[in-house]
Amino acid sequence: MKKKILCFVLLFALLLPGSVFATSIDTTVINEKWGKPTFAWGASLSDPEREETMRLLDIAAPENVNSVSVTGQDLVKYLGDGIDSTDSMISSVLVTRQDKGRGVEVEIKTPDNITQISANQYANAAITAGVTDAKILVGAVRPVTGESALTGVFKAFDANGEVLDQDRMQVAQEEIDATNEIVQANKDDSGFTTEQFNAAITEIKAQLQALREKQGELATREDIERIINDALAKFQLDHIITSEQIDRLISLFEKYQKTDAVLAPEVKEQLSQLGDKLGDIYKQAQETGLLDQIAAFFRQLWEAIKNIFQ
Image (cartoon, rainbow, N blue to C red; front, side, top):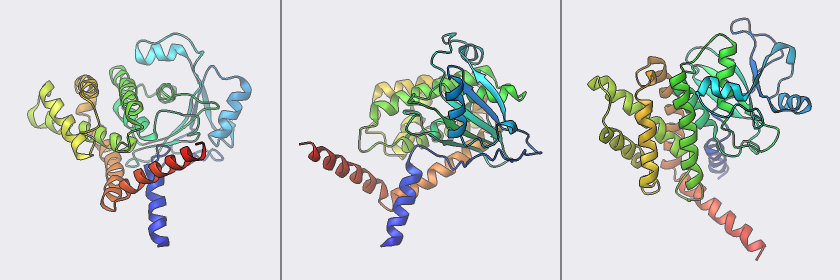
């Protein structure tokens, strides 16, 4: 019985949006292979807020960290649009390189303050932009939706001489926006989890890459729609995602497949690693019935909370 409870707790924790197996970044020593981690902080933060953000990201030795601010001008630089203002730049990131084969690992250190974007959404979009084998910690001193944290990742790479492709960065940001819209619209449906949806997004990317490699030309709109529908069905979301939301995904992936990401070998490798993580977690939860148990648990908890106030 204890083993079953432990298994439930472990899988339940993995299904939460706060982590994709990342751990804290050690700043007490300098990694002579990769150099200093980079702290990219929202430029609207006051000095005390910046110090608090560093604490939240477990930056124990600031002198061992490169520090750069992320401004509204950076939104324009990397994404080609946006408001040239730093007023809402709050979410911040700590980024470091890691050994080849580790993939993109993301941990949200302040899950109560990053209110909408999950760790896997960040990881998936970062891969789209061209990020490889990196550890990313995300944090904010007060509640924010979290969309601008991806710009911090772009700024961290730029500050280290790695300029990402602008077309891919723009599609990556649109991926964050589009997937977040769909997550927010369906988050209260008991049959929907963010991780199911992230797994489906990863599957769509992999299938688009396989189709492009096979036929050597862009997928048609009909191909993209079929791939999307197949992925949603695979992860039991076909009865939840609406036709309007599917159209939003079609628009996103029509743009995605026109970037270098669709054929890049490193994207295939990074997606494979992320897909394995998501797929294994989902498969275990599905086979053991834990998806149904988790959904039932939340329904029961919500009913109990409502009854307290009746």
